[in-house]
Image (cartoon, rainbow, N blue to C red):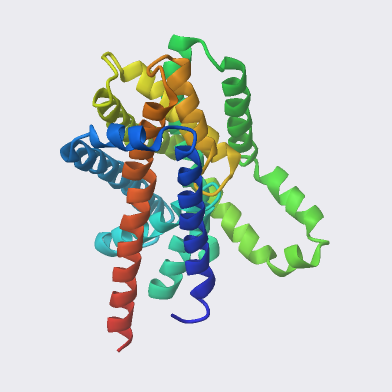
Amino acid sequence: MNTKSSPFWRRVFYGVVLGMILYAGFALFGETEELFDHLGRVPWYVIAGACGLSSINYLLRFIKWHAYLRLLEISVRPAHSLLIFLAGLIMAISPGKVGEVVKSVLLKRSRDISIARTAPIVVAERLTDLLGLFILAAVGIVVFQYGIIAFSIALVAVLGMVALLQFPSLINGLLDRLDKIPVVRRYREQLDRAYRSTRTLIAWRPLTATTILSAAAWSMEVLAFAWILSHLGVSAPLLFESFFVYSTATLIGALSFLPGGLGATEGSMAGLLLWLELFEELTPAIAATYLIRFTTLWFGVIVGFLSFLLYEVNQRRQND
């Protein structure tokens, strides 16, 4: 492991350790023996199936990633593009998943494509992921009439950001003012290139299509959540509840900008499960939270880790 990659692996290690500490802390709020009893109630095939639904999520989001590359007229073989996309999942435990810009770094290493040109894809991915989750959360919020004001404020803020980015005169004027700052002046050319890419990616037509694709992708994990809940003693119907709890908690985690949404996502998810009276006690709610986060967040990190190793192996073969 070279010195350049050490900070990368250090961040991953810290994220994993933070997750372990957090989940150990959550377990203290419930009966540990009872918690393992609830976890053991969920058959292995349900956990495998939930991971399979998460895999469909990754596939749909890969389609979005590859479409963005084509939109920027960047030619990358689908197999290599998929490997880079999956490797980026290892940084799902970074704040707001911004660490997934590592995909741009990997493209630079393997295809010598400018980072400033592809890094905006990560911004567009996060924006459309948020908008897709807003769509899913709206289903539950309308039904349960909870959190409408906070939901509306957050949605307006995200849409406002997208709208502002549509005006090049405004953004270029802002960059002109910031050009007095040495670090901005030094990277002005890269910033201009990044903004041109961003504006291409979030034009209204591609933005609409990729937002719909994002909503479809994240709905796969909602279905996984409903499936897990059904094996923890929660009676049907669960669809609206699952849409509401999973998407709202995921949004809270994303907007908290904590690493992987750790703490914010788990806490709000368990709290909403109790608020909806899907569980009478905290322990089964914690079990549900553990299982869905393992089959979504941590499963993705594992896939990302294996894909990153495969990428490194391929790079060494090409360099030999």
